[in-house]
Amino acid sequence: MATGYPQPVEVRRQDGTHIIVTWDDGHVSDFTNHYLRAKCQCAACVDEWTREPILDPSTIPADIHAAEISVVGTYAIQPVWSDGHTTGIFSFELLRRLCPCDTCQQSAQETGA
Image (spheres, rainbow, N blue to C red):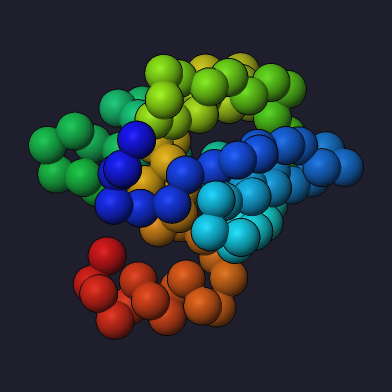
């Protein structure tokens, strides 16, 4: 399925502190659980009209972790977080844009993503 952006070939939890995504182009995204939980775009975390954050990252427990990760169709993952949050869906495209590595962040700045 050609989508115009890389697709994950593996998504795994690591050490209760990270979510690692390996992409079909060979790139590996290493997300801390806190970082990814803070980036949730669901209606409970971000205002649907203004896109202003509702979630205060300082309220996320330091030991937050993904208790489970489900695949949603062929386009996203949905973590079940240890703080009880279950409504966030991270599309593969969003996950790649959120990759915290220097290369991806520089690319996002250059493209305005």
